[in-house]
Length: 313
Ligand SMILES: Nc1ncnc2c1ncn2[C@@H]1O[C@H](COP(=O)(O)OP(=O)(O)OP(=O)(O)O)[C@@H](O)[C@H]1O
Image (cartoon, rainbow, N blue to C red; front, side, top):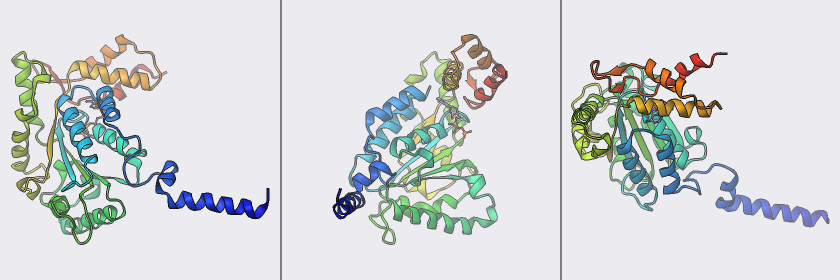
């Protein structure tokens, strides 16, 4: 092959690779959602992986898919996920991230803040506010479709989260940057008692938990979080100004859901499903209320380590 012609051909390929973002994005992660993002894929993931959370599934599917398909959203999507420990809040954030970015939580466009890690000292709150604003501004300037996850909201110092209020509001631009395509997800145990009360009420009245409707708890949840000094949203302008799009309740998990989590874990470790071990691990967990033993007090959180005991050789 003639070397000059070959050089020109290679240069041509390289130029089109660089100048056609779609081509480039076939091989590298880019800002913006995956090509393959589909309602069906997200629904399949939620149906197959998330147990006992019919409300969360429905809200998240509709909210996330609707938002991603809106070419001109008026504000960023804000979801506040609430519930007992180990019921799937972090897990769902991971599923959302993976459905939008190939790298999931490890993507350059997905940012996780953990209150006790990133904002530990109440005395530094002014500094944290500045840092948080700068960090979010910088990342959204680089990629409008950025995802921010705030874990342990209930441990966040009161008032800190209000620093990002301007970014969550209905503004086209804030200091020249548009935040309307970003996604903010807040995770919290605040409101878990309220959710449990409703779930327990249904259980005691012999009703299926799937009969619980979002309206049975969404308003009460936002009010209880707003009035709770340890929710991270205490008297927060984000709630006051209706800037949280959805309060998503995560129901406490029952014995049958623990068994589902254990089976998934066995399969992912490459073991045959052994129903005897599944039952033994599930029975080692503790349940509440004391007399009725309906809900797991750690959700699915510790079933995995308990499984190690049965496979220690
Ligand atoms: N509803 C669920 N369906 C399937 N798996 C679940 C569910 N809830 C929890 N799990 C499993 O348990 C693990 C721990 O749950 P996760 O970290 O999502 O709990 P969490 O609600 O965020 O708890 P915390 O409030 O303590 O942070 C998950 O990675 C997942 O494997």
